[in-house]
Length: 396
Image (tube, rainbow, N blue to C red; front, side):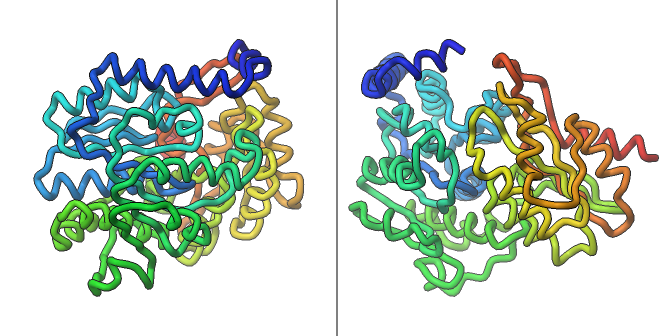
């Protein structure tokens, strides 16, 4: 509540200087730890966490010391711990502390997810980024930024700040915007075009979906930009068996249950498109986050589910201070056949209960997130995957 009052009455330029000051203090406190490390920033709407994981694997395969930070977890070499902050890009002090820990562990490379909110709050300042990677762009956080163009501009500030190496997905319709920023080296990647394709590379990924090919190509470009041998890059990305909460198969017999983080219309559709050809029927559990976040997308999510899913269950998903009932009704507002089950645990149980052999249950929105965010700033311990496991065991 205090934060909302402050945002409402304090001018934006004062808030901006406040955040900038915190970024500087954090860097001073931890003695500017990124100065002599190679820092790679991954930004975009989707795929950031997966690209971070692929990059980490590439540098480990190349026998380099590396640390990474994503919405999923913190990693320093082989040590890892979950990101339980409910924040993809941590605050200035936490991120600088992590950089110091990585520096003390002898890491040469750091891979960070960089979010538009993080950029607005200057969390990227005083970090010595060498490389900026653009994955893709689709409408998200529109209420926060004011428009899609302002959201894109926020992402662009990372490329404006990074002068050395830019890596850009040229299959994305917004690629030209990111290509216009000057850099010493530029790498382009795409399914049928770009620097990696010129090497006649064939990938055999264990991770499903066309979007994961893009993610792997982005990471390979990162490796190539640091003179990692292409064969090592290929070996590394092909070793990746799965990423927590990203198209994660939790149950495989007699039906599949997939848990995925998809929480935007574009991401949701890509998940459904990837899974639909493999199965006769999909039972889909979805919702939408609250707190005034991208209300426009709620009915869009419902319409996408109607297009692909045999059964639709709309449920609660991080309502924050908004009415959960109102949110889920808005998701189903423009479709005809669906169930509303407010209790997310019960919704998952119902989906598993009605699934038959050969079906697929798809639970989207939270992935491996460890919390459910509700009114009053409270966070309830949560894990969609664990709820799936318990519900499946109770069937037997």
